[in-house]
Length: 448
Image (cartoon, rainbow, N blue to C red):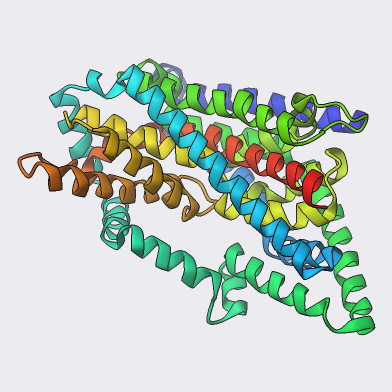
């Protein structure tokens, strides 16, 4: 337990020092005061990128596919009864959809109340559109996603669930098809009688080995999150908090804070006894998940954080391997409370910035499409920005259908928020991961 607190403190120090180091690199006055500052700046960024993205993120990503496969098989085989597995799966999906809808509704209420987009003038919009158009790769990616539409995203999600080649899916690091295959495999294993013992023992032993490997990698987290934060802030700078876009950032962060610190703990308190002594203090469980939450802030990826989430939930949080093995891998792929809230706020913000009036029906449409789009968002950095164009397109179609004289919000409008997306992504990923952990704890309480 003492080593757990030491690691937590080191990760926190890494987050703080990484932010400071990144801001110093970003600050032009600091850079200009140093000899050969441009070379030093480039070298520092390369070092941070190597330590954070190549080594730390690489080690975490290396664990994802084998950990997902073994944990899901262990979870399914430990349930045994197919009807009980159906109950767990059904309630897990109910939890995911419910909490995402709550997050979206909260975001819509806040952005409608604060109206941050009304503070953006025409000149700022034009500058943002020009700046966005210069990033051709980003323009092509978002335009392609917009052309797919919501049904295209749903089709893509279904095609991922049932891959043509499971080995190719694993090689590409796609967790969703691995989850589906592992559930199918685990169910069949439970049906072959006593001969399944050797298979179950193998996957249990493999899972234990992988968790030991995760435990070792976690000790690199302080260096990893330091490098990732420094690399991120050095390219963006903290001055964005003082810019015209700061009110938008405040609304997103306020929504994430309310959802993560009030709504999810309240749900946990209502539906699960979270303490080993039978107490119902949800913040005790949040404290137990602290390493996963802080790692999520550093990595911006719920998928990359999954190994740490599994470690914290099972070893510290008291969640059974059965529940964690089923709920957490699935949650890291489709349960995106923070992303759903962010997409709803961002789309309404852009509508306000371009003077588009949104009625109640359109807000309901945003709530539904933001939830569905968030499900289709990959558990990687800034994935929510890509799927957000689906929500944007749905809003344009709905508003223009009712009033053809209204000008649509251009995809280039995303240039207004793209510069601050990485910083917001840190916190919405933390909420995503915390939401997964709460779900695992609740399912562990009621369905196992």
